[in-house]
Image 1 (cartoon, helix red, strand yellow):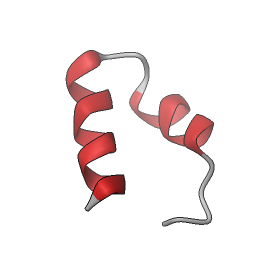
Image 2 (cartoon, one colour):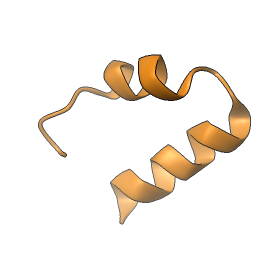
Image 3 (spheres, helix red, strand yellow):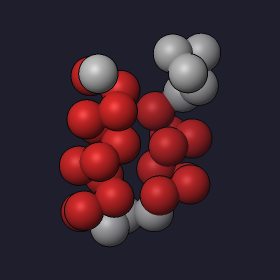
Image 4 (cartoon, one colour):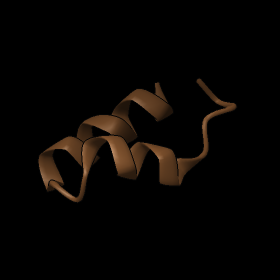
Length: 29
């Protein structure tokens, strides 16, 4: 998962704030 760039996450989840927060939690976790 760490190999995946951050912008890839943005593309997948979009700019939704809820999705963004969830993605950040997943990365931090």
